Length: 326
Ligand code: NAD
Image (cartoon, rainbow, N blue to C red; front, side, top):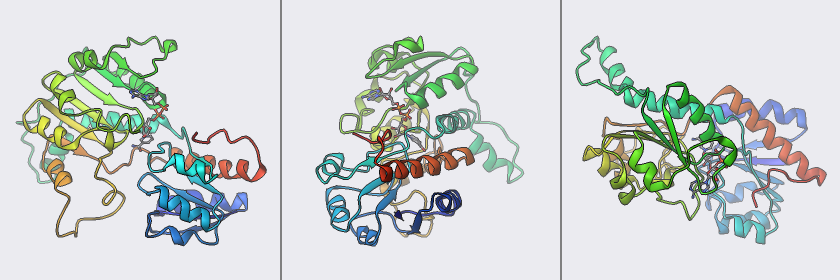
């Protein structure tokens, strides 16, 4: 199998390169993201391998089909980058990595929560300049506070385990509550009204785009801390910036952003003009943004490579495609 690998970075080459050799697959590593402008690079390959910020809309899928691509491999869990209806129409299976290390992703959520709450980023800025003044760095104790978890799937459950460790009370909302988890499920409105910390862990789909909007922020408790390590599009960024600037929201930790496509995974410090929404978010010291790195642990990278290549193997062997996105 010849795989056209898009949006390559050193950490991808390190994890996929040696493993692909063992499977006997040939990978061409392209630095470019997969977009309508770069889809032609996939000519001569059997599969594409894309990540979260590659763009696989209808026109790309049709072009890939014409180029002889037989399967679309996603080395991630989220599948919002792909037009699934058109992939189905073209007969191209979309295979993903549903779970590589949900603990790693939740741990990044917890890291952002702790950092924004205890203002570690501001402390670091001071101490590296020999400034050990701690005025203005007051946080809240998480012990005994209430955490509202939206989406109680694999990552949401890991986040719950971590937050229970801090002694937090957990309430949850899920479109499909899981009765086996012994959780207190509440309505979204109740979750907003009762939570001191809100962490969102559901997929981005047309139905969930901007589910956290101006109205949602208005329903939240004053001084809430909001964490998003799922997908940027779940949240209306301008409404989020308004809520932080007004003091309604105490702090935000986010690993994802709805305007991340042109920025994340790249050094964009030299751009003369920046996206105004991203610039607004970054300018606020109560918003801490990491660059979609929740997946970036040694364990997760190895698992992503293994499951992606196993998916390719199952496709070649005509076996059941257990990780197909339907
Ligand atoms: P999962 O499928 O195990 O869980 C998702 C949960 O969301 C499910 O319980 C589902 O019922 C629930 N859900 C679906 N629609 C909902 C809605 N409208 N409202 C509330 N809940 C809803 O997925 P997961 O492995 O826990 O991953 C969650 C998301 O995290 C993924 O979709 C992905 O976008 C994101 N993610 C981000 C990173 C990162 O590096 N930042 C890494 C992996 C995954």
